[in-house]
Length: 505
Image: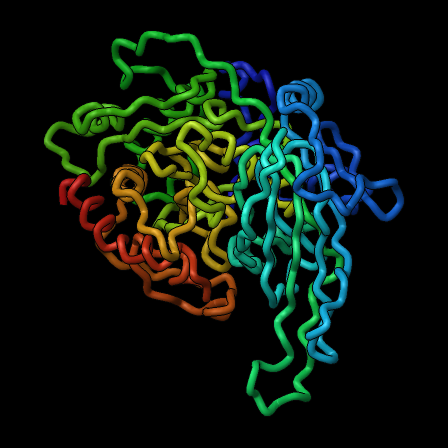
């Protein structure tokens, strides 16, 4: 069961007290009509969708020595035309047939070099969310205002392992598309893409009659502009007694769903943190161990295992456009485990750019993939900054779309970057430890412990199967995937130990 909280922009604190705790699941709206239509027909504000099949497209034979518009002019036009971000959606088509193509093999699809309005993140989507892309996706891009083209970069094919559970309202109640992982490429105004299907038979194989693996239908290249960073928030003094901030919401999860001994503590913590975020703060400040204990109204002498609350950049802090997501919030009963992911967006970003990366992923998840909101509950950048992900309250058991089959009663943490062959920064691993020590502690979970979860159905576990996992697990523990990358996965033992120590275990 999940509770849905309906909110509206501009609701007052007093009105928030009267909001219903649970709304029927059937009341949850689907994506806007614009998002449900094929990309070529999308006309929602802030989205620039181009269908080259019926319009005159820029010269597709653009070469690297083409004179590009002045970079300053492009940035000015970008700022004026799409301050909230935008998406260009371009249909892929068969490319020229290479002379060495295996007979009967599916054609390579893609786009030749072409100009585009400025963008910073790319991905490929297709019509059927259940269809898998068996092949390789590569892109190269041109830096805005220059003639410099990047080398070919691989895009992780992803294949729906980060998604809402099968049969869930988020999965069934809207037009969800198959998608690759998004790739951060930086400020660019030119692109080329190729999607190579898997060969029907490996070199040297005797099975020359193998059935070719077709590419999914309706493949489109998504070019995402994250828009401008939010204006810096004026400095404000911290409350003299943060633990004494009055409650403004009465929307904590049902008390019966929480560990009984922590019910009152979690309700108090939820109230404090909800107000900090809902009053428009860009950052929820860190608390010391003593302040954290005080904020959850511990009885004298009580010693629950809750780590100190870390500093968290709110959705406002990274510039989330709240008009993009579905208005309702989805909750589960508890947070029994944390799944660690990597975003697979590449490591070519600076920590100053992390908010732009988040806004791009957010738009890609909602507008390109058809999800209700940002998929992960939290994100961590390479410098160890922690960000609020899916909306609904940082202390709540918010239902995410991060680990297909295991989204219920868990949370998803995405470390921004790709960590298959690159070691994750120590700061990022430490941030995962701090975040899990606090958030899992609110729900009585031991970071070094085990937990039994019921699969909602994945390519690794059938629906209904009970699976014993680590309380802090990697995505690959619940789904047959490389995520969170071999190098990050190896660091989870360190994260578990550090997290438990922060809880006082």
